[in-house]
Image: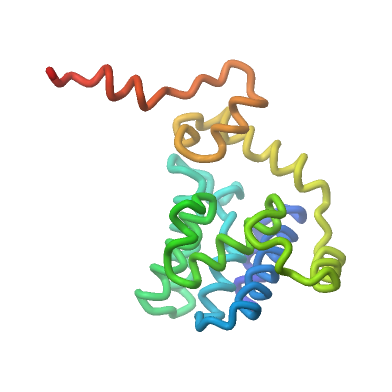
Length: 197
């Protein structure tokens, strides 16, 4: 875990590092409340590295979640984690912004998604975390204008790699904040397909 914390700190802007730390601590808090078995190391690595796809070092042609998942899996392999655990880390990172899937996967994937969701928008179990714990986590890792900075980060991806934003939440940022952003419609893809009916 300490290596994952160092890795995230070295690569991330302070606001993003604080976000992943809060997300991990929220996820661990929810795990404790649920009392269900889970792999604490997999949850920590997944949550701490879930936004690697937003940092310059891992900016690439794929959706930022997939770029981040690939980077987190490579990190886990280098740390000696086995194939099953590295796959759980990949799934957790790749699906963290797709709760309609992530919440129905293995405990580590679901907990990662929930912890991130608490920090993202106060949803998915926000009220389950005791006020004093919430306050101590946010005081230890302040938000540092996360709403504004995260919006700028995602809009930068929308502007530079729009083809990676059409089927994830980045589309919402593009439609609201990026002039001229026009995502393709999957309905058009169906109706314009070359098949005769």
